[in-house]
Image (cartoon, rainbow, N blue to C red; front, side, top):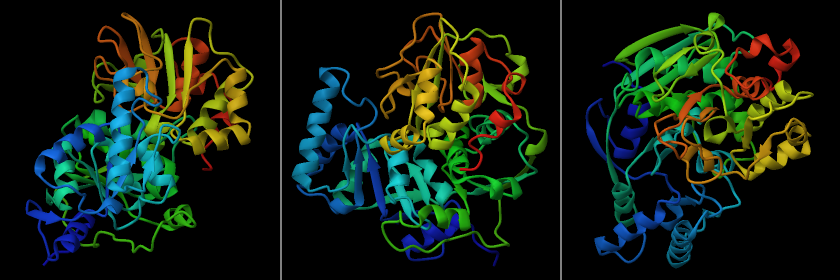
Length: 429
C-alpha cells in the first residue's frame, strides 16, 4: 500500500479510519470561522430547530468585510451578529477593530499544524501555510456545523508543486502564485489539495507561504499546504493556543499531478482584468495608466509586505492623480508598522492609511472605483465589479509592483525604478 498524503492523514484521523481520494467522510472540525456573513448563517441555523450551538468554542467570528459599518444595512448586520455571539456564548469574537479574519486566525494562534479548519470564506485555504487542512465552505454548511458539529468532505486528490531556485531581486511569492495560476488556469487544481514544496518554499517566509495558500483557491484548489518546518515552529512559539503535532505527507505518497518551477528566472507578474488567471509578465502591460493602488488585504497586508512597499516609496511621492491606499491585514500589523516607522514613510509619500478590514478588496466601502478607472492591487481577485464598479478594471501584482505604480502612475517593472537595497526590503520577515 502506497503512502498517504497530508490531506488523507488529516481527514482520515478525523474520520477514524484510513481514507482514499474521492471518499466522502463525516468529520468534526477543530475550528469553524465565519465573518460578516454570520448573520445570514445564524438565520439559517435558527430554521434547523436547534436552540444552542453544538460547540460554541469551535467557532471564531470576525467582523471584517465592512468594518466599521459603512451604512445602516451593514450596521444592522453587525448588530445581529453581536446579539447572536452573546446569546450563544461565543468567546472567540473579534469586532471591527481587529482586522481581516484570515490574518486574525493566524496571529491569534487558531491556525495550527494538523488542525482541520473550515471557514465560510473561500480564502480559508490560507492556513495551510502553517500545516493545517483548511478549506472554505458555504453558509448553509456552516449553519449545519453550528447545529451538529459535523460536516462531510470529499477527500481530495493531491497535486504537488515543487519550487526550485532563488527569487531574483524585485520578484516575490505573489509573482510565483500568479505565474502558477496563469499557467494552469482558474480550474487547474479543481477540488485538489495543492502541496507546495522545494528549496524556494523552504527559503520563503511564513508570510510568503500564506500568500501562496491564500490564492490556492484562485486555481480551484480545495486546500493549500506547506509542510511545517522550523520557521513554522518559530512563528507559532508563544502564539499557539494549544499543543499540536505536525502532519506531513509520506515520502511515497501518490500525487495526481506534479509540477516544477524554477523561480530564479521568474519575472514580476501581473493579472489582467477580469480573471486571476489572465496573467502575463509585467513588460506586457507596462505603461498602463493607473488611477488607484491598493497595497494590503489578507493576501499581502502583513508587515513584510508593508516593508516592501515602504522601501520603494521612501523618499518619493505618490504621483499626482493617483490614490494609493494602504490596507493592513490586522490592527496588530498596523501597530507594528507604526512602531517601526513604516507607516510614517508611507504617509510621507502620500499614501492613505486605512483601518484593517476587507474594504476596497470587496468593494463594500473605502476605495470604490469609478467607471473607466484602473486599479493595481495586491489583493487576490480582480473580477468585474470586485471593487465596486463593473465598468472599472483591476490588475493584480505584488506590493512592490503596486508601490512602483503609485510612484509612476502606470504599471511598470519595479526593478527599473528601485535600488537593490529597496528591492531586498521585507524579505527577512
